[in-house]
Amino acid sequence: MRWLKSLNPGEQVAFLFVVLFGALLVVSIGSVLWSLRERPEDEQEEWQRRWSHFRHELNMVWVGACLFWAAWVSGPVGATLLFGVFSFLAFREFITLLHTRRADHRGLILAFFVILPLQYVLVGTRHFDLFSVLIPVYGFLAIPVASALADDPARFLERNAKIQWGIMVCVYGLSHAPALLLLDIPKYQGRGAFLLFFLVAVVACGQMAQQVATGKLRARPVARRISRSFSMRAWWIGAFTAALVGALLYWITPFKAGQAAIAAFVAAGCGSFGSFVMQALKRDAGIHAWGNRSAITGAVGLLDRIAVMCFAAPVFFHSVRWYFGAWI
Image (tube, rainbow, N blue to C red; front, top):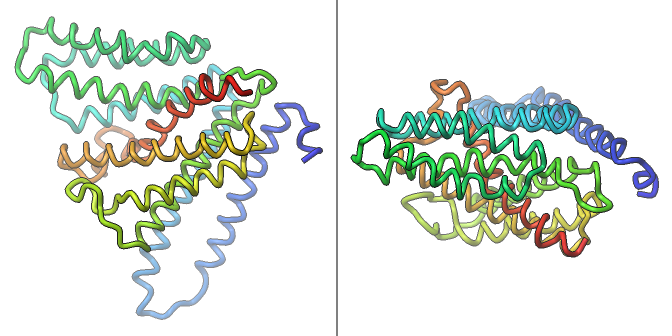
């Protein structure tokens, strides 16, 4: 620990990526060796299904780690552009699968080509006060005005609410991830990558613990028609697991152990509820997965991958900046 603290911020972040990619390499080699074991023929079909799912998830983790590294290496401008592309693809995926009319084109053009780029410009230039209110204040007022000018009152409220909700989740929520990389905290300059890593780690551990708890416990679903697997008992297990992981990782953050645990609990809990909300939206749209596995958006299932972060990132960012910032 003393050796780690003796490194400068750039060397500490570089060490983080060495550990991250080293762990992924060990897991990948171990999984390949494990897959070479002989198994009974009656278990082959189930084994192939599980192995295919695990390999797909591991590949996605590798992709995420590489993008995380690219965001850090490319600096503020590169990180902002990278997450801006993610927001564009996710928003496009969201809008493509929902009903829109010709009169919505003005609002969509405003959202895609004005509000989205401006949001990330404010992130990249660290104008966090304006970036926090651009979409929920100015964007939410401008989009219905543009739609009203198209002179089509049919389902006006529903159509505009869809656009506003999509840009709130896909653009506003996700834009807080690169903002963590650029957040300037006293005595913590240059270590924003640790904050983003902390957020991803605790949210991922919380999600995994919740999935395991859902499979092991016969808990009553909170909303059966939306999700037969989401229960408050599993949610509490996932949130408390995230809090434990957060307390163990407090040393990479500017927080004390208790503060890190609270931040992790809040972020993971909000992320889990966000995933639940997105399931409700999918039920309303009559689909099982964003992207519908047909490549019509160019980013199949991207929103399914980042939905949790879209809800967890803004809550965590503002907790760090406003609430916990007073204690640092």
